[in-house]
Image: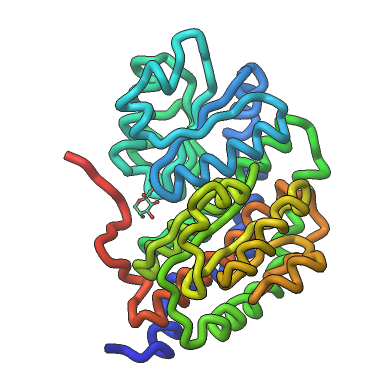
Length: 358
Ligand code: F1P
């Protein structure tokens, strides 16, 4: 087997994780020359509600984007896995609603996502927007309009920069739709604000894991950070084949905390609006003997005294604008946990880059 050092040095996945600030910059810049944007914003201006759809990582992206749209536009925005729409259409799109649907798929080929787009456009007669990282995709053939972010695509199976870049593009559109230019400006500043952080985050994650091997991982987040917690959990499972769960932070007290031990790694996404309540849970889990990682924009006294590892971004940005950057430490955690277990995140066990159904 290749040494850990070789697997790290040669890793495409790690290179893609560390390239995210550049991918964000190129993705946001591509909107400036995208002739579809004005038409998309015009369609969005007449919609009263929105439905974001995806599979796997793209579903959790849909969740984080839907939370962003709801907060930024004040209009109800839901997220669903494509399978829910296909199996339970009346539940997913109640007959008296007329949402604008956004179907998200890095590959643009995932069977469930393409079938969902086809159902919405051809049967439910619902306006559809596609968001992908792949050119000339089956998804684009089904959607009325499609945004293609080729600079955010990955060679890897595991989605990292495609997740954060597509999320930021959807957040940018919400900012444009709601006329909050300051929010769009804060997104455009993120690449500069984060590029210096990533290398140190990478080194600190590798050092923290050292010879630790955890039995299980827990990711906790409230509000717009819940979708981020679920994506973080998936990253650790995909790259390290570890058991990982995600919960609303305060929900964790209601039973799941039974598992907490020194072999449990709990990662808290601490928000600004819910910090006090979230930090009470953090301190309690530390007391129970768990190993605590905190990812936040600004750390407080409880975070510093009760965490075994703190990732503090220190960005001068609204809370919603931090959703993409805060997932990066969790991507690194998943990557290095896999390396420490002797795995190769570039070739994740059992996974394919696209799930194609017969
Ligand atoms: C969705 C997805 C990924 C997963 C794996 C298989 O892909 O489920 O989330 O990590 O790569 O495909 P897509 O629809 O966004 O291309």
